[in-house]
Length: 495
Image (cartoon, rainbow, N blue to C red; front, side, top):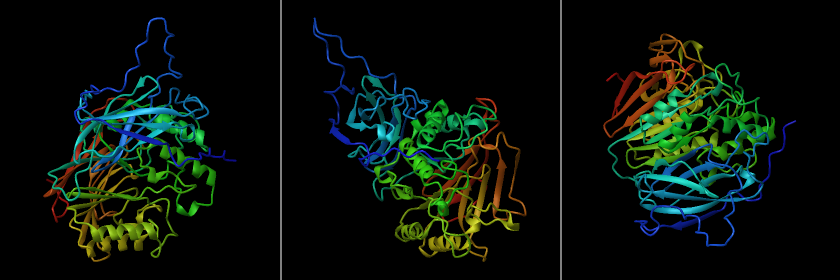
């Protein structure tokens, strides 16, 4: 039987924000030091726990005036009870945001109360930041200082944006190999990272590395799995380089779970959802409510792009032409977003293969099993006059560059770029080429591990498919195996 999820009586950690002067001169860009000890007084109390920032730091969901800042206190991240070695009491965690990496120009600081019921995770939401700016942030708790990391805010609504570099990644199976792709992603210095699902795998044989214990079925198990994933320095580096937009696929809970499984193992679902929120840079709007956690959301990037982040797992209806892979509410939300969009590029960040495949060659849990849903959404962006529609996809463990047709008339109306896995599937078999007869809409396919690097400008989208030579050993070479360009209101082509 699944263990019960711990109940927390508050909706999330409490929040206290203090404005720092724009110059931060009086504070010298530092968090308050420990007070000096007068002669004859007792020595200051030692910290109650060891260094707690073992899981690193992260940021996400940027807005023009702010961003989510995340960390979790866990001096012993592999602790069997899932509590990370923390005492059973709230802990105040200070955060600060600066304009420079040396923290001499602090512009915001505040305090969050990390509570045991949320695994001492922190989700700070500083506001009042300048739009379209790079910032640096860090945390402090009971004398311990976290690593510093880089983030950025989104541009102001409607602001002109000359360029945006976005990395997309998915499917990081710890036991299948080393996260070299994450390290290379960090070295590419993207402005934004989209993680498109399977952040970890609940079932992992550990062919190359120790996956971190047995398959999780309760809250403690899912917390340990998340913490073990974050023990990887390459993953922590990727989190530290830019804000992330995250959505899940199936392995964050269980293989091939979908909306129709709502009544099955609800305690396991609650546990997985809570642990996911505790470990992701998500806003308080995503705090789980029982067996529900809202992940679909829209993130505008000035006049250049709008990111529609989808959840194709939680709300599925029965398969078939009348079914919906997104569920009716999310589908209406997405179509309304198309109608109101004025962006140069409308980008769908989602989990499973979107473009049609010939010869019946498709997985049962992709858009191919929901042809009516796919056609309604494709026709929706066409009828709304979306300037450029781009679907960014994970799940496949293979790179793809696809054309998206409108129904059966063959007219290309959008582009799908599918990122391969970080490690899932092992080293891969290579075999770069088009999709062949079984996939007439595919212009490129390659079975290697890696990630996708895209650059949006007002005149074009450039996509570089980055591949790792192998993942069975660390530090393998990373190269760009293929590049494609989509001109403004144009079609996918080689540069």
